[in-house]
Length: 357
Image (cartoon, rainbow, N blue to C red; front, top):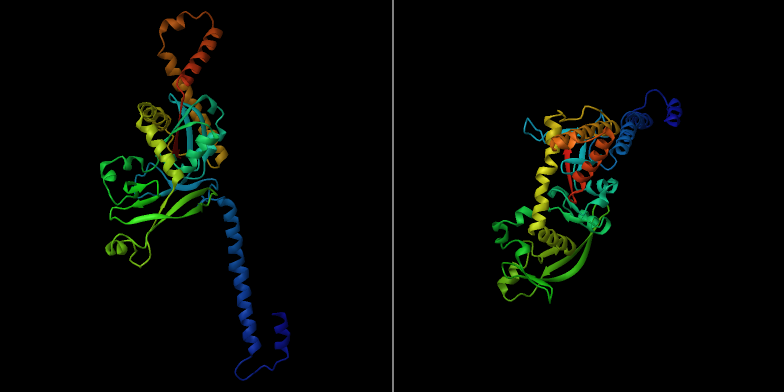
C-alpha cells in the first residue's frame, strides 16, 4: 500500500476511466481492514476457545470448567442445556466411598478415570453400574486392567431381552450362522460370506476390530441374487464385532444368573437414595459455585455430611444396652471404627452412579 501511495502521487489528478492503482489500493486497504478488525481477532478468539474446550463440545462463559448438558430436572420439558458438572460417586450400603467431578456429560468415558483414582478398589470384586456405563472399552478395562467382575448391562440389554426383539428376523443377531464355514444367512435366505477384517479408531484413540461379511454374488436363485444387492446395485454388507459380542454374552450370562441378579438389584437401593437424600434433605440440586476445584470441595463436604448422617442413623439403630455397657468414650470410639468397617466391607460390591449438577 505504501508503494502504491508513492506511485499515485506521480499520477495526474484526473485520469480518464479512473486510476488502476487507486482501485488496487482501495481493494488492499479493504482487505487490511478486514484482516485487522475481523479475521485475525476472530482467529485468536477461536484459539483461546479451543484451549478452553479441552476436547469438549461446549463450555460456559462464566465457568470455563463447566459443560452444557441436560439436567435431570427439566421443568420446561424442552431438554434445555445448562452448564454443569458430571458427579460420579462410588457407594456401598449407601455410604459414599469416593467421588469425582468430570466435565464431560456422558458416563461412558468417566468410569475408567474414576476407578483409577479410587483408593479402595482392592476391597471389592464386582463393579456395578447402570447401562450408561456399558461399553466395550469399559468392559475390557474392568476385566483386564482392574481384574474385577463387571455387573454392568449395555445400552440395548433390556431391549434384547424382549420377545419382540428375539422374534424379529431382520436383526442380524437372529440370523443363522455357520461357524465352520463362517457365513450368515439372513431372513430372506441371502448368504453373507466372510470378506475381510476392518479396524476403526474413535476420537479417543480406542481401536475396534470388525469382521465384514459380503453377500455372495451367486446365490441359490436369481431372486436371491437380486435380494443380495442394494437399491443402488451394489452387494450388501454386514459387519460383526467379535470382541463386543463376547463381552455382551458375558454380561448376559452374569445378569441372568441368580447371583448376578441379586448383585445388580442392590444398585437401586444403594446408590440412588444417596442422590435422593442430597436433593431432599440437603437441598442440593444445582451447584452454587464456579470452578471445578470449588465445586469438588463443596461436593466433598456435602457427601461427608451424608456419610456422618448415615453413620449416626446406623448407631442409633443398635441395641441400647450396647452403648450403656461402654466404660469409656475411647472404647466407644474404637467400637465405632469396627462398626464402620463391618458396614462398609460386609459385601464386596461397588456401586457407581452419576448425577449432573
